[in-house]
Amino acid sequence: MQIVILNGPNLNMLGQREPEIYGTETLEDINQWLKTESRMQFQWFQSNSEGELIDLIQKAQIEKSDIVINPGAFTHYSYGLHDALSSHRAAGLFSIECHLSNPAARESFRQNSVISPAVTGTIAGLGKNVYLHALREIKSRRGN
Image (cartoon, rainbow, N blue to C red; front, side, top):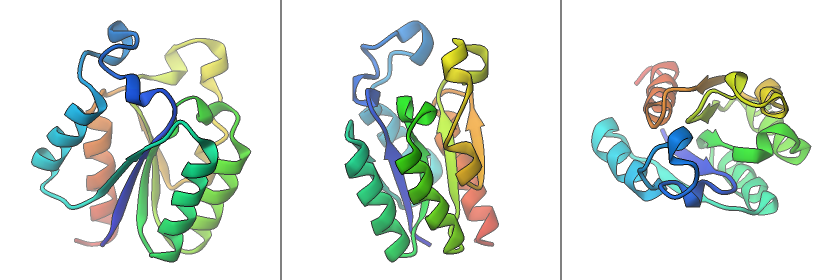
């Protein structure tokens, strides 16, 4: 079982950006915590580029890897990510959308996800634990 974790725009600024919403841990802190806590192997990427994330989704599909994705702001308008994730799901692979905060409880523009219809499921509002829950869900669905 191969899993790729993708992180979208501005997540590289965790620890500095709105700590009252996202906390004080950096994305690398979360990555290291997740490696220890999950005891699972995964590949970890962050990009502020929509095209790069699409390329990584397509690569995951070719390599038969499941995906955990925190699309950041692309959640609300990236039909390119939506289409890539739809193709990934159609290939029989799992993908879990996750968000550190709860978009449904935030500004109205954050309450719509164009990504959610293209993925297996969504986990939000539990801080860094969203990644751990997503990994465990994929593992469970794969019967491992």
